[in-house]
Length: 312
Image (cartoon, rainbow, N blue to C red; front, side, top):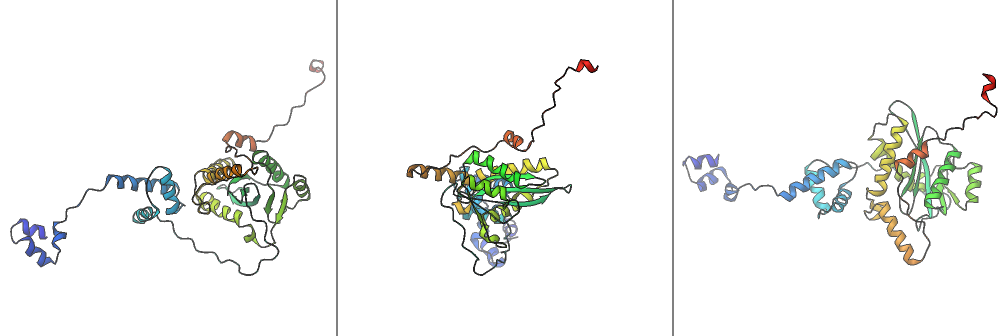
């Protein structure tokens, strides 16, 4: 309105600002074109935030720096707030308070020291059950396995552990709850023969197995609750793809915003400098090995030991 009065020469700019109670600097302000670098940054923040919608601003800033952007987490937090991309805060869970029963289990000090495993359950859209066996290295936070099937028995647990030992080497300890698949006598005897010490938490004390519980929370929040899994085959492919991102792409706050794979490589380099033997880092599973793991071998056909012509 002030510009209209001034352009029609009804009054001066000073008089118009005095009448409308405007600052003269505001009246003379000319809008600037948006910075090209900031436009590209906002586009990159939106792209990474939509690709990893469950991650907060600190981890999104780490992924942007990995792409070559020189940006801090405060600027990323501001841009995400302006674009409405903030992740809702999770309500803190009410945790049991009191003295823990029994001696607290061994704390991992190097890669392959303590593994932890447990089961997590879900369902497909068609109504079928999904039972997943997960194995995590407590020191590097690497997820070595998410075995998905309709049911998993103690023999399946042993077979999957044998395969992991062939890939990553045998751990010194393995932590679990008191599930029937983990306390089976044959499995316990096999673990003892393999030199692996089993650590069982106290009944009703899941906080003693916090690493696997935290991993299950991330798996459910970032994958299972966000994907529609229609069949067992689709679930295996989708979950294995998420496992690759968890190990090689997703940064972890507990690892100083490094991925588990990068942290494991650094730990292996330090172990080599110190002279301590450490299992070598093996490449991630590809879909060929995934298909080989889940496909059951076909039974051999019975061959006849007599000529067929005599019957025909």
